[in-house]
Image (cartoon, rainbow, N blue to C red):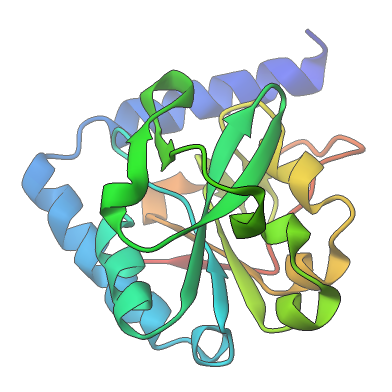
Amino acid sequence: MNDSGLIKKNIRAEVLKKRNLLSPRELVLIGERLCTSLTAEDLYFDSELVLAYASYGTEIPTNKFIEQALCDGKQVFLPKVIGKEMIFYRINSMNDLVNGYKGIPEPQCLSSSFQYHKLNDSEKMKSMILMPGVAFDINGNRIGYGGGFYDRFLADKPVLLKRSIAYGLSFQQVEEIPVDEFDLKPSRIVFI
């Protein structure tokens, strides 16, 4: 592991240690704040398609937000990990999810016609993506869990990357995160 990888690993461990101290009640309240904040964003109002993720462990809960997006008539897509790639599938409800990669809720294997990447460019124009993160720095860089899934997924989607947003808690902001060649950062980070 290079120096950059070791620094990221240490930051990840430190932030996850703090995040794992959150109580279930605190997580519910944080999830409600995420939903309220995110659904008030201009980016959300302007988007017809919402790429999100089903939270897992002590991540900021996304269930309430996903359910609200569905109620608001948004087309909601969540990732399914296949090998080293993520494929975003459209869901109609949280009941479309099963435990998948590392126990993370993800869409069941659905028809390829429900895949985000199968949509044409005009259908994708009004898309936004909610990116997860373990830690963020003051320059907008992020650390995920180390798999590089979002970096690979967004590498050839500059328009979607410009319509990306991540949420974190104040203790998830660190001074500096080392950046590697393929690391991508969300267009905007909001701390709640």
